[in-house]
Length: 177
Image (cartoon, rainbow, N blue to C red; front, side, top):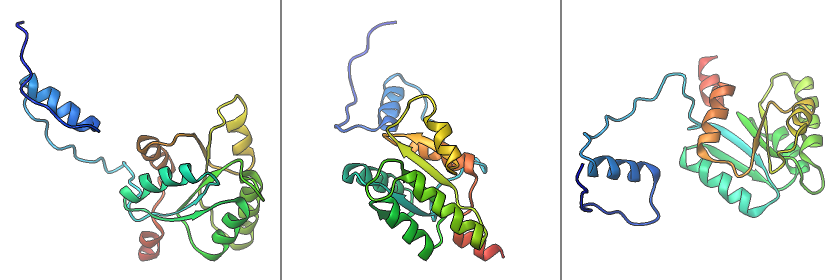
């Protein structure tokens, strides 16, 4: 095969989809059809999400990911604020950092689960943490968390997580009842 000269370019920062389309076009491949989302694929659009994270940079990253998908997000900085926010509003999912000041994610999760025992219902709580040591996931699950994801969290991680949880947004659940 003879080498080809560059006839296409794109500016940085590039996105994976842009790079893929550019490379396929340069190789003469036909454009791909738009992907049709699977009915089982869950997107967080419309979800009400509580994010408990003490690190400002991590809060910005998670907020950026969630807002791009249309989720409604409430941010808190520690476990005590998470418990207070949870008692005042209905959430579809809680993303809970493990190590936070005032009250850590383990204790906040235990208190949220105690609140749920008194009021009924179950909202998925997902540990978001830099901890990736053996036993960390089990410790999170034992504290009452439903899932565990390590930082830095990415959109693909969030997609897989929400698909596993299979959770219906509060607004849709209310309309169905």
